[in-house]
Image (cartoon, rainbow, N blue to C red):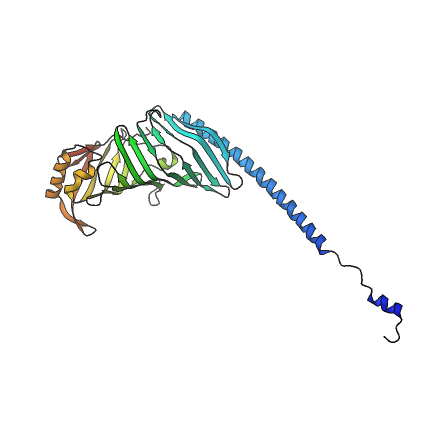
Length: 348
């Protein structure tokens, strides 16, 4: 440095040209990202809008087809929503109207699916649900929550479920019935070609002046899948086989379990045989009292079961087992007729 002049030292200390500002590059990246997001948003919105229009068109076709088949499905007013990730259709009120059955009406219905998972449909229904004239219904049902789910496969229903929590049922002058839980499950039978499995469950059913009841029914209908397809029960001349895998009804003290094979006739009546097992037969009159009030045959049936039923055991408790015969929907134990079931509506 001893030989360097002051001007040379000043030149050595001068900085070079400034580097490119990183802030400018970051700004460009943000702008590009915003443009991409805008393009995706516009594209997704366009797709959703087209899908919603398609859904509304399909709903209209369904309503028109149902009306042509004799069941008018009312969905008024109807709207489509759920943007951006759902597609749902809602009805301000919902009703099923048919000349062959009383009108069924309910409150708001909303059903939808995720855009990226259209094969799972979930629906919620507001009460009350009424049967008959809503101004003076034959029966009404209110609840805290009612939900339905459907799983689709190849355009058809593969599984379905309905769940109703904390419901109150009113029918005519009969006092209200409280129900903790009602469930219905349906699926294509995995082991039978073209069959349908149906499972009903009821828990905490409290009729006036009776102990709470719990019950369940599991059946397989060899219907070619018509039940899940919504085609109704089309019964052939030879009848429709129904396999009763499990039926049970109990109130804590008395329990009846049954299983067997039935056949649904074209006239809606049932024939078949069941094998029943009863815990505490003496309690049968009180168990069935809400369904069969003042039925003197129940006392005789309880005595016959205790006297002639084969000794057995259920969950470590003593029980009696005996056959039940059903002919033209008349349910009999031996020579004693217990009840005559009403005809089942069929699609013939």
